[in-house]
Length: 483
Image 1: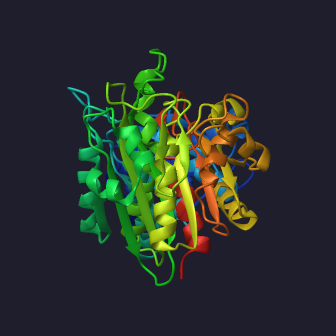
Image 2: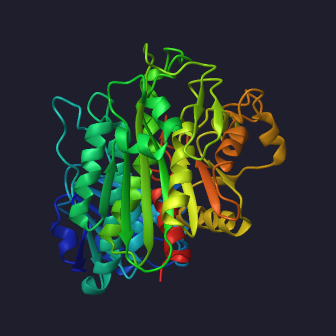
């Protein structure tokens, strides 16, 4: 990903730039100076386009493209409708339009006095493709050149956008990577490399987790030849108790002995999506040198059917000491997270804990692919998360916790069952995790099963891995956990 560049707006460059030129206009206002220059160069084509009924019918942030405009060296001239009184949503959609049209050549975006960060961020987020596994990959996407009134003043905004976009792209790359390439060991090694950015990284292996008593997590991993890992990343940009962010990292999920249907199982490479978002977030905090104290933990396992694999009916002892009756080995992510939650709370004494997991298919039935489920034991934290998600344009919806869901997972022969059956499946999964959160500890569980990998374009991404969560959690940290 080529970092965006800030240039001082030179109207003469609009005529000579050979790639794509992007300008902005409002049909109810005079043409801005960059659009006016392009109109003069193209002998009135811009004014005709902006005055047309189909341009007026466009939603703010959408645009149309003139191919090989007369009087310009550009391959294309993209005209985006943007009202004079813009909102962040308008800017995000404009950035998406810019990014969706990006090819291998550079794009010159005539921002002039428009805010740079949102357009740059969302152009970079949308201009993404995963080519790592192709034998003949396409060339890299071209650079974004942002022509502004004050290039030096715009640079911090572009650097901030770059840190976030680069980290979201990392999440997408991780989620897309096949399980024979990205396994527990190679992922742990990649995480260890983040120490170059200033993160403190610690990797626990099977023996260390066994000594700690993490037998719920280890039970998931016992059927795989890929050894379990627990990666801990600390960014200490401030003093005081940390925020702990925890990610489920099931590198591939067959369902174990409770084997999943074969159709669609290839998508279970994305079952480490929570871990990927956690890693992407920690990278973003390090890149932008956030004044916050945040610890990210990811539990990396593979859930395979094998003679050594755990069975339905097994009972395993969690690190907390609760005896868990395994009803379904495909309800494995909560077994990974429950030990992580207890460990994080006990070792780090955090201000709050937030876990992310592609945990249940039930959340997709409830919310589809546009919103993550937010389960939270603290109203203020829930409001902060939902506010952050709304501010960055990522969909989220609060879901219920309650004693009725706890009763559904009471075990006759142990302390708790790992599933309460189909009714309220996402709620009982969250209720299971809640049992491993200390009394009084603010905690949120984000079920991202529906938003981590989509079959169509999502808010900021082409179809495939979205990277949902990095923007929301970064915004949350900026607003509530910095300073």
